[in-house]
Length: 442
Image (cartoon, rainbow, N blue to C red; front, side):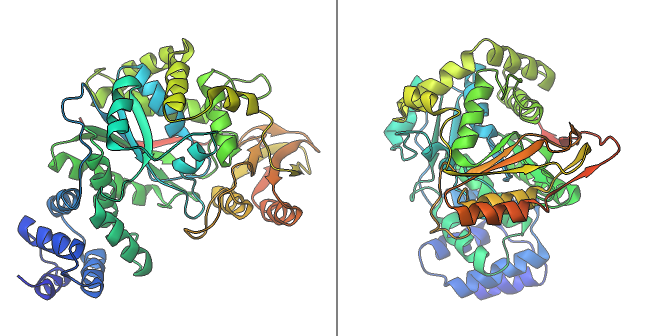
């Protein structure tokens, strides 16, 4: 078997066997197949695609390229969630403790921000003392004592994905749905998840710009997981405007804590979009884990555990377990902001037509809430606060958005950029539909 023959086969639209895919993955991981041949093969996959069976073979080979977290013998069910990334998407922070409060265990390996979408690990780093680097023993202990953990990917877990992702980024093959699918599933199954819920976002602020693209990825994720004997469901969700009120690392942690307390800002309840999507995703996690028979039953249980304070207790227990200072974190709520502030005000009376999620995400990144390159420094106190969202009535001169920056220059640049990210119209605007569809294999 030679790599060049497999490249030619895929270039011609052929379907690989499990042995052939394993040969490619193992050979590349061990340094026996060079970058240029794997790059050529991935470009062939980009144009010719892969069957769900092939994608399953690729996922399994990537899992087997490194270690799998030693979670054998733990009482489950072990159910995780993965988001394809959005602006203001802090749902994982609320979802994990809420799912645990409902009876699940959640093994969660997360990533960092790159580009205009946020990263869960960067948000967690904003918590005083919190460590996102856990040993295997600590991971297992966290599942036993708390019910969930949030950590970064170990160098030993799925090394094939780390190597292949680095190539995809520089060979224009990032958008390949089979390669995206194998990358996501290999990491999630290597961390010990027995079932998965996917949040596949569509819109201006998402990786997939249209509902059709999002559905194609959702179907690939669900059907490939099914070929590997795992239960899963994918939600297609709207990412035309940022989620919730806050965008920025500490700001999003703050909003998550208030959410778990059953609170929003200025005496309001939690943001409606965060509540709807969090309850729906936890509801499906409970179905996937066998705790509930319908998603509606799961949503109802999740709402109960949110309202009775159970989820907040699990959150605080996890923060303390991973080295965080709960008291200090709580004392910083509402106060921890970067020095330079600007307000964007309505210039007329009417209805807010919406926020452009991509522009908002890029503005937050330029402030330091995210990264343009992997070496960029992330600043926890910068970010954006949205006082009004799409469809809400506004008055002339009313504050629509607050910018928090660490320098006057960045503040002014963000203000200029964000002045193009919204509009006010005279007639009522419908609140955007958040849930665009669902793909299930349960």
